[in-house]
Image 1 (cartoon, rainbow, N blue to C red):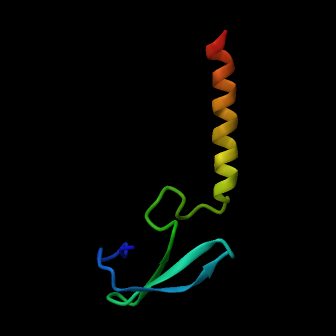
Image 2 (cartoon, rainbow, N blue to C red; image 1 turned 45 degrees about the horizontal axis):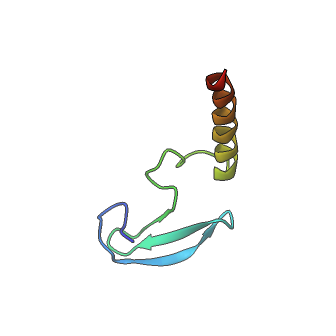
Length: 68
């Protein structure tokens, strides 16, 4: 695992975020980050499982139109 700030491995686990995502502490920058940092889900308040359900639903609908 690398930090999102310095790409070093100088990190430690730092608890959990919303009981789901692991939090980490960057020892080089004295900052915390989690699994969603620097992803499209970073500032979203919707859970990842909700995104996967939505994507799956869209895929199933598109699959029905393609089969016709």
